[in-house]
Length: 540
Image (spheres, rainbow, N blue to C red):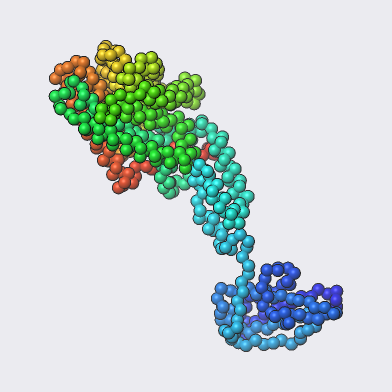
């Protein structure tokens, strides 16, 4: 008898109605699970055997409702056996038909370690969207550390997912932009591609905030320069424009640049991967010139009441980023394979050229010579190549979609600023300045007469491409009018200035409405969410 295994069993008998009773009671020995509760006193479960005692533990798992098991009116019979000893193995004790509510104990099974919700924890995990983690600067490391502090161990699948994201972040190929995107701006996803961010929901604001937002600052800051020229140019003295307008616009520009820069710097801190993808985007990289061009305009438009002269060192500080960016961009135009100019040529490339002329204009106004001439020469050479490439319309270049037609006005910006830069370098608005000014004026009117070309499309940040070139043409007209003063040139200067001011005002109001009222100014930026995986082959 001693060699036989001792055990305790609980049997549930069916009632007269023959309805099955759920297995609610489970009996196991205390040696198997030590954390289970004991519901029988030690005196009742201790059975003497050969001079020592053997103890048994009974664990009960009850339903959520105390009356759930007894609602059917069943009779339960409890038999406890120990090799035929200690209890009657032939007799059964009939339980009462209704359980006594008093003295009942309802004990639950222990929860799995590391979870306070038991089996519901995996469902809660699924509710947390981690698809944005790959764009975060720290990739959710803080969240994982907090989870480890709470005792939650990182699963193997999460570790594999993190390593995959980090691998893609380190080895994301630049050529994937051309394979995954299409269109002249490379912002349309190909049908065979997929994105790494959800396309059925609105992304966080910083992920939707593009570098092209600095185009707003270009339009407003150039207005400060225009109104300063209106107040100081000899050909517009009859207008009696006060420098107060220039002062107000300059401070508005300062505030706007600070706001836009703060938001984008926050994006750099929190979503560095998104900024990195914008920088490697062959078209979007041109907008990284915009913040520095804005600073040059602020230096040109500084009110006399704020500063009459600027330190020469400021020019070198502002032009240093241009030098490094141009070494990268122009080298790719010439020596690149997928990024050669014949393939990526787009009106937005003018942003990488016009900065040379704005920098030359500022440097010459400070009294510098060699530095401004250097940047003027570099800008002139690459503008000529870009102008010819865009006009050739090579088979590799696609027709611009209607929503991007305003960027054609960037054709006007470079020659307009170049005419003023050369005038400052030479000291007069000579024939070289007039040639470039007439090119800009012709391009301006050739675009303005095509009204239908710029109507009937949805508002977007691309509309700000109107403002900067229009303002530059107005300022160049005032400089030309001062050199060749006549009623015609003065009238032209005033008309272009009014058109530029009205355009900037209308766009600023419209931008505020779409940004804060309609809240549709910043859609999901598909261009930064392409996958690093190659497209699946399509069966033909």
